[in-house]
Length: 201
Length: 201
DNA sequence: CCTACCGATCGGTAGG
DNA sequence: CCTACCGATCGGTAGG
Image (tube, rainbow over all chains, first blue to last red; front, side, top):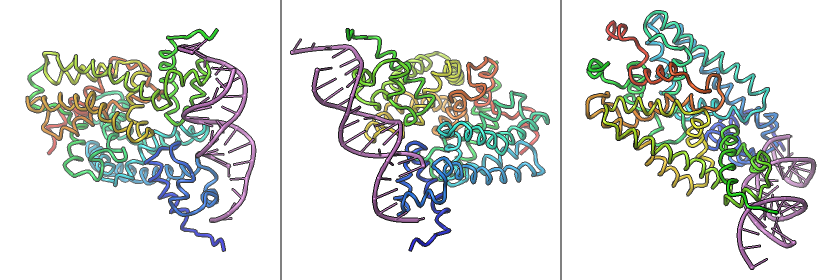
């Protein structure tokens, strides 16, 4: 009896991801994860030291994927504007649960203990935020983008996609190509029509 | 002894707002609120039926202020583009704790009980989201804004400000006029330079 | 016998 | 990797 199940770790990560997305960090009990998997609570603690470590494993795993995608996009021999487009398309075309992990990472980090939060924050900055900012800064230097504060350029870029990182809002399933195109257009070109622009200021 | 304190209700609301912003709904215990105010926990329950009602009172109070501001902006005899500008300026120029309530309202609503969440969601839609969408739709009809899905126009507008709704990120104190101007510019005109636009597609 | 509260503790549940 | 539990703390309420 008590046969170890190596695949259980992966199943825990997968199920816990969905559940954390639905309920948030404090809104989800370890017991709920155990019940959803039909395993005991101690089975969870066999694979993960505590709730924090399980949560962090989810975020770290996703962050590593994201870093690879960004590095690939940064290496493309195209204009910065195209890199931003590719990045936004990559993120928005992901399945809802994947997008929701970004939401999770940025929202529930507050609930973690101080040292864990700080170390994750640094990795998050290095593997994700910093690289986006680098692309935007390069675009400004090349005259492709307006010369604004790099931090503002970065946070408005991420912010514009934020509503689509939520789990289960109306129309937050898989996004249509047209919707993705429109979101990208707002960031790159703004919502004002070009004809309207000439009539003012 | 046991003198009633009518002002206590307002003090609870004020203190609980800051604490909910810092810790989230489940991250904050009623006891913490009581301790911060140097009153007993039952004193809290005298003024509010339960934690949910207290939380809801905070959100509702803010939502009513927001509705007034939006109605005032909608009534201005100016172009829709100027209304959007005024709305964004109004929101972004608020003190950090006020902005953070929007964050609270959209993030922690999940933690509420089903009936409460549904009824609040309707009010939120009616007093806030729906009115923003109306301004944007009117702008599209007048040819000021690009003809995109109204929901996309609305969520990208709110999304672009989202990073500035967080409590205590670096540089999320009072925003400078220049920063506010840049954020508004990204939404209205996009990040791409006009000169760069002509060189592609 | 009301109000506006307090000290103490309730039944349940959190992480471990 | 299960059953059986723990110290503590949660939201909420008793009597006075």
